[in-house]
Length: 435
Image (cartoon, rainbow, N blue to C red; front, side):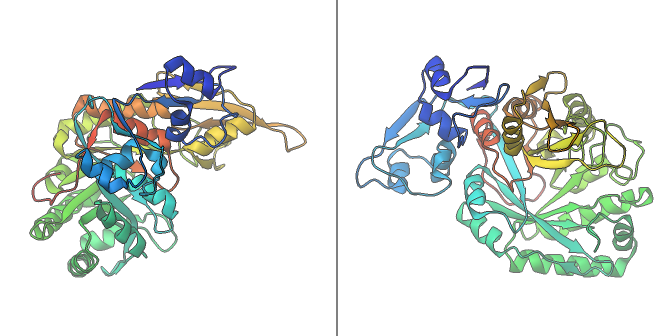
């Protein structure tokens, strides 16, 4: 695998000739809809198959998989042009194998809302171990409001992906509520009610488990939150359900701040089957312009996490988007969010050059909005193939068990190309003591 940085004058056909690969493969793998609109600084993933097959008349994808003793999911992953579907045509060249994966096995989780585009979902599912459905809400009295999850559940099962229910303390207003967390953690009757409803939902809807994402947990409820997770794991593991917990990106035990104080890493790690580190959003909608997941910060979070939690229980959170800030930055103003692909499109539309912040492993660009009487400068930080490779390689080097992608609502082709090149993606399995 090579990550090519587009230079002035580059074309897809010239790049293909340079690496002795098919231009069609570059276009299909990177999901490029306009090959004549490359952006200087844009990253393209170049892959080199070790074995391919040309489809013959009468072939079916299932028959090809059987003939070469390959899981159907492997054919989908090696051929993103299929879009997770089994439609093939005579003369089509399918990749059967790539070189050995340098980092071994990895558990992959992706988050999705119920309104995800079906085509995007099907493209993505072959790369996942778990699909976490955002989200169920627990009320102060312990009742749970469930999402409209029928499509996500049925599609995940078709692709052999384990669906996980995300349970949150989001309030009616849409934000995470410290008061809602306290209500549940300090009220035994509410906890009993929540437990009953959660068990019922997991069984009736055939989930594989639950992820607790309680944010802004009060500091004095940290022990109670860990106890809740442990109690849930003990109760649910008897039925084969996994219990995960999302953890705020802490860099030290006594880190101050409402987001961090209620998450005790060591206790949560001992209590849950797996811990998913939300290691992104340093650059955020209401914050100052900066990378979404700067590598020095990610390293500090993972180093601290590994001092408290076994690597076999840790998944690193990664992002699939970027933010566009107006300059000069004014506190309280909101940055606009774009998908990773839309960031590149925006760079093309504004004739911007994409640069790369090496220490932070973060692509960025600036442009001027000329729709106003006086042009207004903007800066965009986002994620691309190079930044993804840096974070996925870190996971491999540290021996973490998994990765979680927030989120899969818009397809991020290079993310999955690199993931598939570096790791064997594991199938889900019942949880008892760890993930």
